[in-house]
Length: 385
Ligand SMILES: *Cc1c(COP(=O)(O)O)cnc(C)c1O
Image: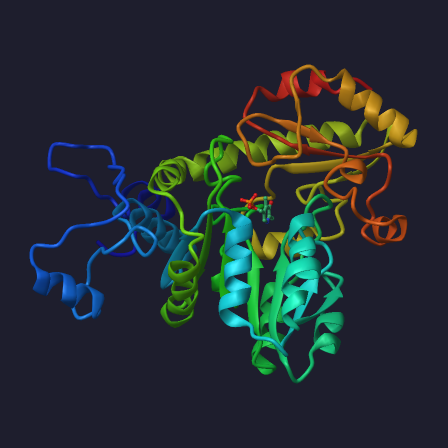
């Protein structure tokens, strides 16, 4: 079957059951795989015959998830990992060596910044930070030893965007790999490989599972690149478990429907928030008032489920608003069916200095919502301002 559309691939690709009667995908809960003969075992280990050996290398349920996600992202290959952080660390360790240099967006998931500053930097790998949307900063940061550009677009919580086609021209001209963390939108709304990125990373913990049940991650790209990344996971062990692979595999079935509903709900609450006198500013890419609205429209098919806003009265007002909610969960997670509410300055960005917060526009009055799939009128009524 050729040229199938996204929703058909999301449901049919990578389909694998243990026997012909089973209709739902099977979980292969096994750490190792047995061989028909000593000769077959030898052939598998010598890579003369394809097939499973040990679950740190491959597993049919994990394989089904990898195939389906690769088809949805338009990637040649995928390797699944135990979490999003494992995906980022694995990518860097597999493709960068000591003496190399990474240019990273300063508007990234907090733990990604901590990973670069405290762990990756120990291996004599230099890191420079730039503003996500400013192409000239990326270009000027390139050195002879630059190996990777690392970023998320749109950024969280403010929804800044970089023009990926333009940035990929800079990375290609300098022989640098463009690595995009696509967790915030998922392939249902954005496929960076089709816009010039070399590698896509996922925290499948977020929208791909979509129901807050497990941790999972993935790295996608060309066959050659993913072979290098897979060689790292099979040797060091941050492989995805079969059980968690099954959860995220089933999550992909409903991904596009859920993302449409997240986007619809998010736009409605963002529009409502923009009209409230107590709200100073709303950051949602779907609003025409967002400075990156037009650019986002050229590379995303939707604006996602994250809405941030600044409430008048700073931290006191923000805490009061958060504490007064009865439906929203006060938690830093995102991408769940359940809506969540967070005060970034004291949680996700709490480790930043005041100056770093100011640089990243994380004000004391800023509140972040991850809009879930509850009835939007109930969610609006839950924001008491
Ligand atoms: C959550 C998140 C991660 C980390 O993923 P885990 O699965 O929690 O390890 C990385 N990048 C982004 C954009 C995230 O939102």
